[in-house]
Length: 255
Image (cartoon, rainbow, N blue to C red; front, side, top):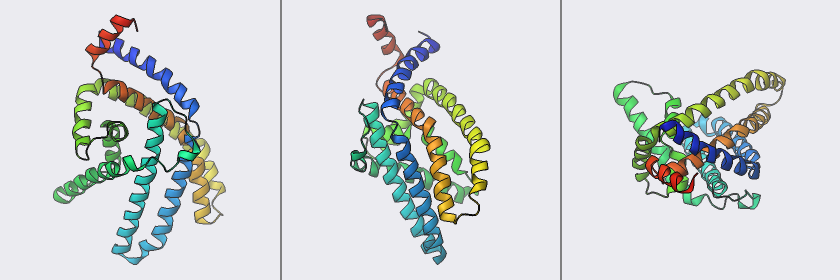
């Protein structure tokens, strides 16, 4: 069985499952939007207050926003795991399942940044934050956090192993969806957010930021939720099977 046959068979199943989960969990889109607005507003407020107290204040502000972002991402990951498990998102479950992912996520977000920081200090080469995001996506870090329940440092070893074993499938899926997301963001920015941003110029800064990012995150959340669900299902299949095993199962069951 060649790569393309396996790729088509996997994605046919994942596409169907993602569609079903997406329609059942549309409320995760406004939840993502509200979390984004809270994060942006708190960051602005902290920069306007603690950020003006010097280096110590700026460090404390960044620490608070880091913990807040890890809490919100952890909570969101808990609902993604439930969605991939076939459950429907319930507003009453907000904030109840984040603790299982909070500490691993602190590790997952801290260690790459520390490594990059040390690399920049020792070499004098600046590494854009964009590459840290690419690292998280390529190494399936979110999926490892919410599906594998590994010890803190083991997640990086597993992510490396997963990528080596599944780089063709994993990178192909992420490249396709990545280009779709970039195109969507470009169109959104040109035709929606820039004209809309011009209308908010005369409003107070915090109110304008809240409205702007609320609308932006709602729009981004439409394809982003589908992308995250799709990744979750792909990861779930690839992490528990090999191409030979999938071919064997299809030969037996005709799937």
